[in-house]
Structure formats: structure tokens, C-alpha cells
Image 1 (cartoon, rainbow, N blue to C red):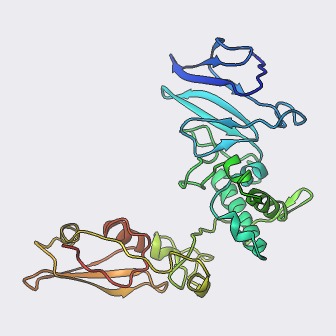
Image 2: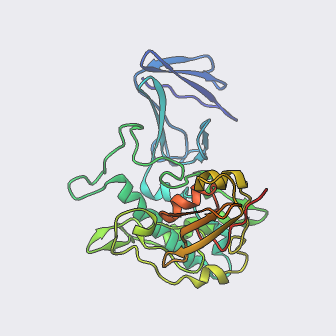
Image 3: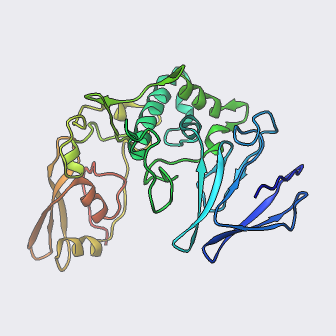
Length: 317
């Protein structure tokens, strides 16, 4: 069923899962008070290819989502008794909303950094979408009927909040979308490949001087995820994460080592990246315990630290 509504300000649609179907109740606008119950509901708004690109450029907001939506359309269904809403949009429109790198990094000749992020984000998305020659549209996740989710389980997507970002007279969103556009020529877009296959390359804001081998973080040895020098992370101006401190209780550390108490903690071995590999705890009686694990396993076990590039650990009593 199709229902159009026109409003000078905003229209609110409340969605609920009712008996395996979606119930939508409209508040505001000419259709205020309307209730629709269907197995699937699609919501479109003006200024989009779905509804009418020439209309007013409206923005949709969805409670619980990471951002707002300027592009695409929202499809609501019920999956396992719970309301499920998916933003259906093109890959380029999706990239416009990826908020993994500050758009301000594009200032003063930094546009190449944003373009590199756009290429990386596109490649990562295609891999997560499981796009292949036999499945050019990819494969949706059954749990959400979506290709990717909007948080860091895939990539942080904030939609119009990223694309339309402005601070004073500076249009940061325009810098980001220009960077995305610079990686597209006609019907071709730049991606990262290995032996002709699109690959997912993982990224973060900064390292401790070198990136990590894949097997030092996870398990599999991946030929294109090798440790390389990354002195730029330590030299970048304004990088607040090149040095940091975190507080972890001595009791938590003692429990981690299986010791009654803790007098000293030492990093006794590191991976090629400089990330922690082996730590040793010493109790007040001199008893020691040594633990070797993957870098991120130690990072979280030691107290959800900002990274696994650790210089020292001091028990906090």
C-alpha cells in the first residue's frame, strides 16, 4: 500500500512489531493519525532517487541508529519477533556516510588521506557484502536482512551526520564526499585487490610505530596483512594517541594472572609490530605467572586498553 504525506516541518512514524507484522502510526502532516500494518513497510522521502530527486532534500532519523539518512529508503520488517529496519542505498551513498576518519584530515593537502580511506572502506564493504561474479548484489545477513550493520562490527556509518558535517563556515562533509568521488571514474571505482580479488584491509587511527601481522592479532596468516613500519603514526601532528595511560586495578591484574596479589607486571616479549605478546606478573611473595596470547586478547584481558602497544604496566592499588 502506498501513502504519501506532505509536511512543512516533520512527520513522525512510530514503528512496532505486532504479530509478525510491522505497524506504522503517523503523527504530523496531512496523514497524521494514519495506521498501517503490513509484513513489510517501505519509507521514502523527498530529494532521493527512490522518491524524487528533484524534491526538497529531506533527512530521515531513526531512533537507535548511529546517524541520519539523506539517501536511499528504509525498509521495515519483523525478524524473529523483533522490528528490523534497513537503509537501502547505493554503495557510493553508503560511503558518503562512513565516519571512520575525521574529514578535517582533508585540509591543507590531506585529500589523499581521505581518498585512501574511501578506497579502503569501499573494498571492506564489498568483502563484507560477499560480492562475487556469481553474486553481483552480494549476500545479505539473515539476522538483519542487510549486507552490513552501521556500527564498528562492520564500519561506522552515520549517514548525513557525516556527509553534511559543517563547523562554522567549513564544509567538512563536502571534503569527504569529494574524496569519495575522486576514487570513481565513470562506472569504475577504485578498490584494493590481491591476486585479482577484492580484499578487506583493516585500519585504525594510529599504531605504535608498526602495523601487525594478521596471525599476531587473530589466527590465520594472510599474505597481504604483513607488519610494515608506520613511523607516520608517531610523527603525525595532533595525534593524541601516540602516548596514553590507562588505570587498571591491581586486583583485576592479580586475577588475570591467577595470583593472590600483584607487586609487579612486566612485558617480556612483543610481536614484530611492537604489540604486547607475553606478560609476567609477580606477587608480593615472589611467585610469578607468565601469559602469552594474541595482542588483542591481552589488550582486553588487561582492562580493555586503548591498544596493545604497551610500554609498561604498573599495578594501581
